[in-house]
Amino acid sequence: MIRNRQLTIAPPVMLNFMTTKSKYKILGGFGLLIALNGIAGILTWLVFIKLKTNPFFIENWQDKPTRISMLFVLGLQGVFLLLLMTQCKYLIVYTDKLRFINPLLPFIRKTRDWSDYDYFQTVQEYSRGGYHEAIWLIKNNKLKDRISSFYYTNFTELKAEIKTKNLGELEINQFKQLLCLFGLSIKN
Image 1 (cartoon, rainbow, N blue to C red):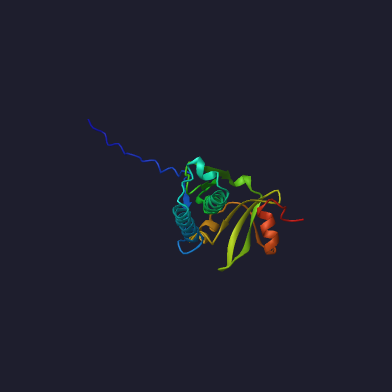
Image 2: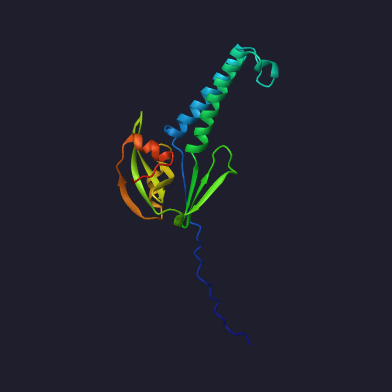
């Protein structure tokens, strides 16, 4: 005798893996930094060709004008690479955390829980291209992390996914914004 048994299927389990990934703005900050790095690379190559020098030979570092030229060009290249690495992080926004991934060295990652921030505020940052909205993620009245519309095309989508308290817009002048980037307290 065969009995009819009903097969019950359990409802799908909703996992905590909802993500939003950043998308770089090619005609914005990301594209600008890529172009500047390319120009600095070409400049480095041209200077070394013009000087008929190789920075890997110790003899080339003995001549003072050659040394100064090489240090200047290599320093310029380093600054632009550092800007690319620190300002254009690839973002992944999860429901419980935020991950920053270095674009040049993707094994360098920083993950922060939403509880690592007290609140966030939006700031109008100025560049030669005009004003850009930025999200400042704040802990103990100090800027912990920032996300700028200058670098990401899906900035509003990223902003909507932030899971910490929003205190609205912060109005501070450009000089104080710069000081806050270097660790100054936001509210004195």
